[in-house]
Length: 337
Ligand code: AMP
Ligand code: TRP
Image (cartoon, rainbow, N blue to C red; front, side, top):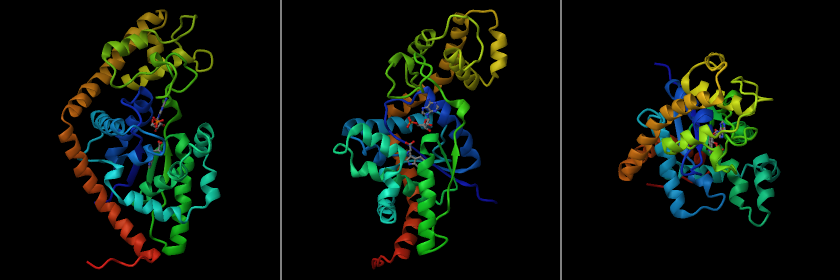
């Protein structure tokens, strides 16, 4: 039997619900990849605390994020879906990697530059500075070959490769596998329904513009009916001149499995009202089973926590093996048992 390639990705527990952008841009792809890869997915609570979090909310968001991934099709008996802080090796390897990361090198990460600039130097933690190093530890602990991420994370995966190469050169060539980033399809970018030239984002300014996976079906339908379009009344894909309609067409196409031109033809000569009504049905049809399954999982937090525990055990086994090799190679004295 040939080994499936190892895949790793992480998601921050940063909202009560995932949105249509997360689902279409990331989750659908992960769901496909899990059958052809040996996949590890972590809810990265340790990354989340690099900006301030309310403790009770963080715990709740961690469960909610995991529940939605399972509900949306990540199979926890096949993929290893776990919580980052449950596996101490992440923090342990991150410390070692911190010692081979250049201060300037970390300072060049554009996400750090953006976030720290917005927050100001005193509000910016050393943890935020070291965030990409922790991400490198996540990836390298599992001897990962493939890392599916959004465009914004590509630089972090490149840093990960640099650190792995450096460690291997200094301490032993076969310590870490070099991971490859797999960038999520640009076509799957979803835009805000009220402001269709900016990305749908959890920090979006228009609540009516964001489709949450856990919204009530009637709320989802209402948001779609009120989505911003244009005045020419034609259901046609044209990202530049018709960003609103084009975004709705993308969502329709991805969630129904039909091509954009099929959908354009079906709604030729009909108004936006008909088109939106049909889209609302498609979206509710796709989201409703996920929503009810997620709520069901959240109704039994003890069972969900048990499942995450089992998965953390599986993750620990792999992570501990890599960490033991690393400790050995850098010259830490082995503890007598
Ligand atoms: P974030 O919520 O920004 O941490 O993103 C989590 C994942 O969802 C990342 O893989 C992003 O690339 C993806 N994602 C977030 N927003 C969108 C969007 N509007 N369209 C497509 N993918 C998105
Ligand atoms: N930093 C990633 C993001 O914000 C999340 C993440 C943490 C991650 N560790 C990872 C992604 C390891 C891929 C691999 O989206």
